[in-house]
Image (cartoon, rainbow, N blue to C red; front, side, top):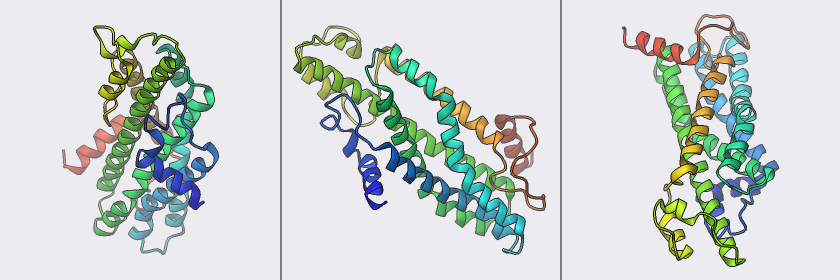
Length: 272
């Protein structure tokens, strides 16, 4: 288990996604161990999220403890279900931009992305617990968890785009070393053909620099798809926080949608 956490730490620090580590054109992260760590981090944040119900009832309600359990189960389930729904589209988009990543490499990359997302999410868990103790506003807690999840998702998806960019650059480098002409090195610059691939790698490799041209557009589309599916999936799996005084239920009846609910929560919180 400690070894798996060290591997996640290497991903967070960027050691596993440097160009030197991606020179074979694939990401070498273990799917099994990283999945276990990711689930653990999701459960950790779920406990922090569900703690609000326990704190509000003073720890005397069985329903509150059931809500804590439900939140711990649902948080990792939310992310993996979203990944399952959007995985086919990512693979197709990946093929459309000319990437030669295998299915296994794509899966490793996505699990690494979830690891980054849930590591950020779990790191913000103590803040959620703090506000659970210091406020009684249910609507504030719902909005806080939405913001925390959105921030974590943004950082995780930024990691995905950055790593895909570097994988593309590593494939160009491999083509150069094996004597295969880089098919579209100029595509990544946007204008004139690039004579020196090493210069291209040096120029485009800064952390946070996304792929350009068609690749950037296609993967931005997938990021939007993943975000929309994830948001609505959280609505399908609700409740996560647990409304005070309401009887516990694993799931609520189908009604409205995530986006309208957030607007209503904001309106209620600010007295609109």
